[in-house]
Amino acid sequence: MKFLVVQLFLGISFSFTYSQAVGQIPFVLGIVDEIHSVILSENRILNIYLPPEYDGKNSMRYAVIYLLDGSADEDFIHVSGLVQFNTFPWVNRIPKSIVVGIANVDRRRDFTIPTSVLDDQEKYPTAGHSDRFIQFIEKELQPYINSKYKTTASKTIIGESLGGLLATEILLKRPSLFDHYIIISPSLWWNNGSLLNHPGEILEAKYSHPTVIYIGVGKEGLTPSDPPRVMEVDANLLAEKLKNSKSKSIQVYFDYLPEENHATVGHQAIYNAFRMIYPAGSN
Image (tube, rainbow, N blue to C red; front, side, top):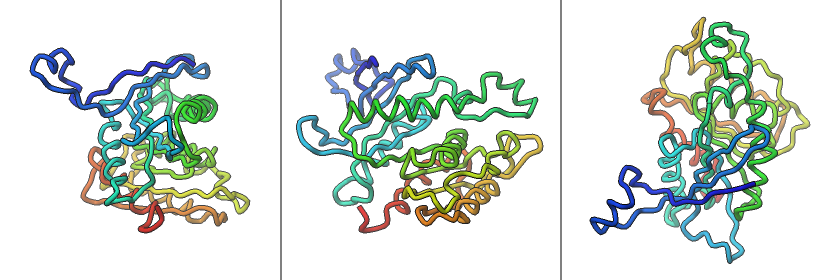
């Protein structure tokens, strides 16, 4: 697989030439990597945040947080900031971690299962290929990250909205791909909520992979579906479904944030998730 590494600047709107002209030094947030996916038949951009002390010459290894909607103009910058804050020595809430922001190409294509809703088929003709994206994560992305970066076995996925739908699908169909799931305002309304009816290996007594799940949702109201559903209700149904699992290897946290809406819930939910997933003294 070919890769491209370039500097990613926090001051993204300022050109490097301008910075030189006024004597400024660019503030480097991370690196941009690129992976060629045979499964998806395309190149995918990865925005990578590395802990400040990351050094290829020592023996330190790091947990990995996989971030859906990980473009620079989506969630990569603010989530990397949350990770940095929560790994400061005086906070020490979560393990020092690498963030892998997966930049989008066609999120409706990558994050959704096929739908039987004719209106959605017409509006979103490329939708319904999440199975290929999950294969990409399992067969190409995770092996690539593990081979190129200094990783531990700890893997977290963060997904919001349609990204939360995909994270839920992975949780129900390939749960051992991650150890921690941070699912925020999942678009479970897609295909008339059919994913809520999926049986799921994680619900069975024989499921033994330790898995911690956080589900957060704001006061969000009706979904953009016909007939409409209620986002908070669907999120709560998912949490209750998981809490009724016969497996003793999973932990489920449900978090209702009534002062947040679909646009604002993400940042606060991730902060809360870090606190709940890693209780005081566990890191």
